[in-house]
Image (cartoon, rainbow, N blue to C red; front, top):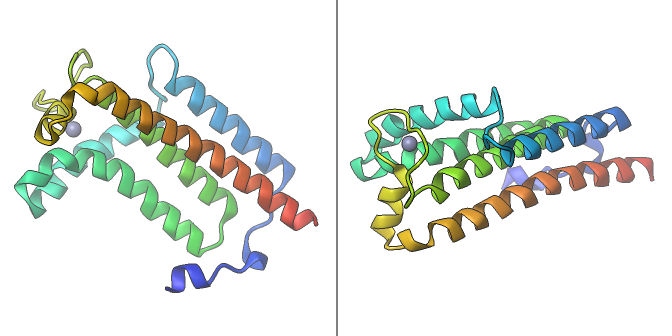
Length: 175
Ligand SMILES: [Zn+2]
């Protein structure tokens, strides 16, 4: 596959110390806000919500049963598409920020998942709770908070992983 065969260390945009610090600040801000009182990263999560709401009818067009998954799928597929595009351009920082965006979506999804049984979150749209429906279909509603914790942990790994990767790229350049 061309996508992977192209990995050539020399073509990546150079990592500067300022850029590395910039990622660290942005990642800490996202982590802080996503785990703060409102569990909401302003601007970014508003955009994520817009993608989420667009995803329901988009995937619904493919199949009715997909409608309920569409919101979450859009939240994951948009950052992944952006990541692939930046990866092909070897745009180092843009890749890291796309991964940070993906990580924030995982935090955002985890908040919604964990709410499946309690249903205290204010909902947009027709008020139907995606994760109550999805977890009920799967027969795992009682595990909502456990699954949410796993998704949240994945978000942490993704955000930290992108930072480590940037650091690795900097070391590889300096060597
Ligand atoms: Zn939804």
